[in-house]
Image 1 (spheres, rainbow, N blue to C red):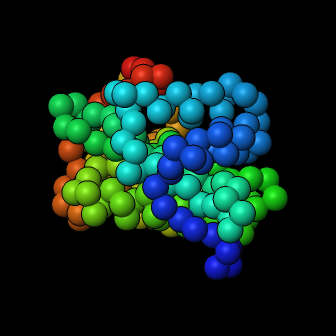
Image 2: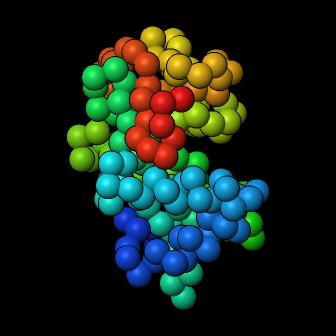
Length: 169
């Protein structure tokens, strides 16, 4: 990745850059719109939206944690990380994801869930959610739904409910 990036909470000045990044990083505008829509009052936690920017200010990577619930327990959902195509496979995605998880840990957050690639997220400590009694209403591959305890304690058990726009999967 190099030392050329500044990693920190996403700022208002970076908003357009994050939007451009999402449109460039995802296969279609629908995916970009879905991740961008997580910046709603119900889901949005500003200090848990990390951006990686070059010295020029161009945003090249971002990771976002939003609110969700496991039964009645408040939890966090890791949205898909986005990296500009020219910076993919350089460590930018891992760096912004680790920064978001560390910010969540520092703020006292504990349970984090992600619906993602089973070969990618275990590097951050995620394990199969089903092993902890966590599930979605909608059937998904068992190895794609993962959970992480940031504080090292037991995870809550139950069904995940996401904030809008994901709704009740």
